[in-house]
Length: 417
Image (cartoon, rainbow, N blue to C red):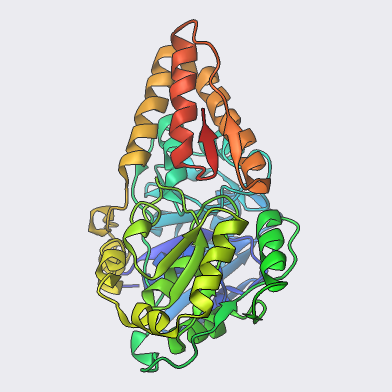
């Protein structure tokens, strides 16, 4: 081990072997650690092993369950490697509200311990449950893959925050074929989904009326290849107004994307109205109107597909490989190297939540978080969710009312009146 080599620890709960991560649709959650010399994956569903993969030393440590102690990891390292716990440069702990690892004993480490908040739009308490865990687990930093949710964590936790390091996932734009090629309407994914209720409804309605090419859910790299090599209109629909790479990658490739409204406090949602290749619908009527206009205008389609002057707007928020390597590839981890994707809406909600916590305490603050979670679950099922103001009798009512207004930037189908 050289003095400049970086060692990352990754609590790991996926069934995909770490050496196959690069070809999975979870890769973007773990991309930063691909720039480290050594990565230690620890979790219950992998076997003990040490190998070299793409020039990186990959150490897998099997733990007894999803809840484990740092001591458990230290014992394996002492017995099988020359690495000590004190050699670890940073912890990249991807967290969901469901079956991710819960690790204890982080206080034994003297390095950045990063809580990477992944999907916070699933289940009934995806934010409050994570806040409770993070507040007891000695984390030093927090980042959110969906930045509109970061104010809930930054206001609740006394941790340093940095913007999640989005990249283009190594997409080679030179792969793209020139010319109009295919100009069809394409959907990649499942036709039926118990969690994506709204998407299932919209998709099945438009399939009855329009010729849409349903290609099913492809492997991540097959999908990347498809959107990179063909001109197409890609239909997407989010769960709760949270963007995903199913929206971003087709846009980067110069395709036309047909999407529902993205949260305006999200970095992509804040610029999406400026992207000529992004067609936005609010409901089924909007969606049918856009598809009808697109279906019969070949000239318009081709003009849209090849007007790529807007792509610099997307790349202004995306990190290059050199950015990521400078941030995570040396022993002194440096988050200042990463692009900042914080939005005005994100900062405004954070400021209000900090004020709520300072004036009325942690329990009041968590009450607002739980109110958001309840509304988010209703929002998942609805095309429009209306909330009404109540009479304001005191200062806490005023803050609650302001909070509900701010949520319209987080949940784009939420209407305040």
